[in-house]
Amino acid sequence: MKSILLQIFLLSFALLSAAIAVDTSGSLSKNVIVSRGLNYHYLYTPAQPSKPTLLFCHGFPSNARDWHPIASTLQAKGYGVLIPDMLGNGGTAKPTDPAAFVNSLISRDIVDILDAEKLDTVVAVGHDWGSKVISGVANHFPDRVSAYAFFAVPFEVVVPPTNFTAELAQQRAQYGYELYGYWLFMEAPDANAVMLAHMDSFVSILFPNDPAIWKTHFAPTGVFRKSLEENYLAPLPSWMSEGDKEYVVDFYRRGGFPTSWYTIMATGLSQADDEKTIPDAQKFPPARAPIYFGVGQQDAICLPEIGYQAFANDGFKGHNITIKEYPGDHWLIRSEAAEIASDLEGWLENSVLPILPL
Image (tube, rainbow, N blue to C red; front, side, top):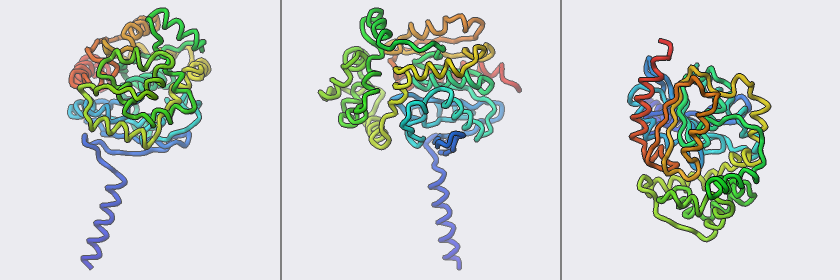
């Protein structure tokens, strides 16, 4: 009888362990079906009393793991941590229709996750496309966020659809090269296949040891495909280990590349959705919400000056905005993780906690 009970206990424990995995920072690995029927996978650790929860949204090619150095530091200080696999990534659903990726839908997904965890408000932290996501939450559900931190990419100001070809020409004239020419490759039907066939080259280009590589092998129209097909290789950046590289390669070989994030921008689908769904009164975050903007001095695509221009918009008059430049490039949340974690902690203590209800 004892043997049978022991077997039942061990089986129950095994099933529980499979259902609720724990990552290295102690966060519970969870899943939720959002209101439009899609599964979202996320990591969650509740906050200690009197501390808010931080929502971390990653971009591309990135994943929830990239936030761990920063998130684990702040979690140890008592802050709650919520890190979703963004749509198209990891354990989250991977819809093939680009229209599924517009801000009005993604922001509802995020709020559904907050509701599932009974979180009335969070401090939203975004990097790359993750900054676009938290911008959308600001536009559609401003009462659910008490403060915003943007890295590399600033708040996405609502603009009407533009001619993408003309935008590239303007960038070439202003900066000497096209910043977003690679978006056209990301739209191509064979983009996934080409990137998967040249993963060593993909990692060399997307995570450059020399930030100038983006100006010659990534950003301008046509050069990303050419560099991949020629198997361009370069050393890894100092912050990226071989283990990090293996994780990235395996992550995308298993799940593919969520290129719809680029399609909705290059086609104007995202801008059209914003125009249609965002009220004029919600085109900017509420002035009550403090904002942090961290930018890499060597970012060759998300140039610091572009971020500064965004926050110089008249819509940000009266906002409490903290801006800091870091010596890294686009991947500052990895290369400068310790400094960013310390800076975020100071910002939270000095600018965010004082405005939160007791």
